[in-house]
Image (cartoon, rainbow, N blue to C red):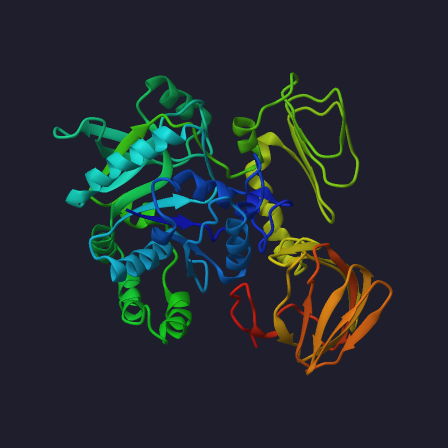
Length: 473
């Protein structure tokens, strides 16, 4: 059994907490684990780390690797990097081809990094049943029994039960997000299921169906397949992948296949897709509120209020979502929570960074916060974790000046290696190899002043890196 976790989404409906380069799967939305940590933990007793593959983009691999290394199990799964987001059909095909190279008879479970599952034991039991069903070439999807008239989910209508296996049904049809009246009808019927987007099948079976229904996509992957595991894999992926059609596996394959079956399950499943989803996974106070952070609440009801460092005073709110971060604040009616993604689209049109990054950017080695920037300069606050170090790197278009405000920094600058302490500083000229390291057991904090004609984060060449980041030019 192999696991494939789809984790490349940008989480636009969880803005402003979720950003393009730090999306919801990297956040602690509920509990003390991030969504990706919770997803891996959920299946850790069923699928071993060496058989687990996470499909994501290059920008998120570093942080996922770091987060998963912090778990008690210190999980070290495999990563499949998509050069460009191309919807679920392409992501699943890429994972299936990768697994086929390892094991032509592999059975893969396709999971999402943004799900909440209350009854994890029942979830694993259902995966075991699905793996058995998949042996005959069936494509298996898990259907969750609805608990409310939900209009934000897709539905599956089961057909007749398989004669050889109880609790396994043919699929009569798919239903897109219904209106309220239809959703209430499905709840009363107690037959139509939520479409969870959790699938189990043999890699050979899904590749055959992709070839059958999406020949253009499959043709592109034939070019990629020959290079998987070779030195030319990355170059071929970057050349071919952007040309592939973007389509979901549901619409492109599953809704058309005669191999599809569904297993109904009552496992307490939720898709953590928008701020409204928190109503189903986080306990509320007596007035129906979810309150997190530095909040003063007076008389609000049925509202979600999230605050960071700043005080958020909420007075008499009803059915609202309020989310305050360092650089952006969201206020919306819960009935319009799905439309938050439209705000992100507007921000993209403005060509700023508010949709893409937080002012404070978390890295495996620590974090940095952009304090101010203008023409030809940028000022950052940098924190390096005890025992951590940045990559040995160089910049083509900027120089850097470091001033230590707390701790002791070990600095590599050209051929020199030396330490600087509180109230001391050093200068790193443009084009010189350098590295910042905290060799102590206490945090290192410093202020960095960048000067140059271009100050983008992509002006970096990495020569050595303990976090496995790919060199960029």
